[in-house]
Each structure stands twice: as C-alpha cells, then as structure tokens.
Amino acid sequence: MAPDFVVGPINPCGLLMKPSAREVLDELGRTRIPVIAKELRAGGVNSLAQGALFARGHVHGLAVDLADMDDMGAPSSAR
Image (tube, rainbow, N blue to C red; front, side, top):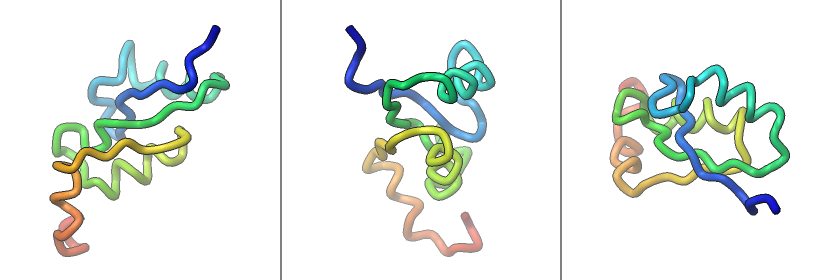
C-alpha cells in the first residue's frame, strides 16, 4: 500500500525539510507519490511568491495557510 499523497515542508531555505533539504529534493525527483508542499514561507523568511515558485518546480500542489496570504497585498518591491 502507498499513501494517496504526502504533505510536507518545501521552501528555498530548507526549513523543516528532514533529514536535509538536499535529501528531500533528491527523493522528490524519485517518488511517484504526489507531494503537496506546505511551510512555503519558511516561517516568514521568504515571501509566499518566492516559496511557491520554488516549490512548484518540485511538487504536485501547494497547501497555503491563510496567514501566508498576508504578504500578498505587499508592494511587489517588497517581495
């Protein structure tokens, strides 16, 4: 049996990506199980746009928290 999908942190900083960001990204390239990214902003280090752009290159979907939407109204120069 395999899960229908997996949800996990994926962000440019590697925050919470275990055992390491490199190992997670390597495994994402091998797995056939769909992965949904969360923690896109890495605790506020990245903008939502940065995190989403990074994650979209590695996963099947994004799970965005409502709190992550706060920076969407910021001027584009702040992103």
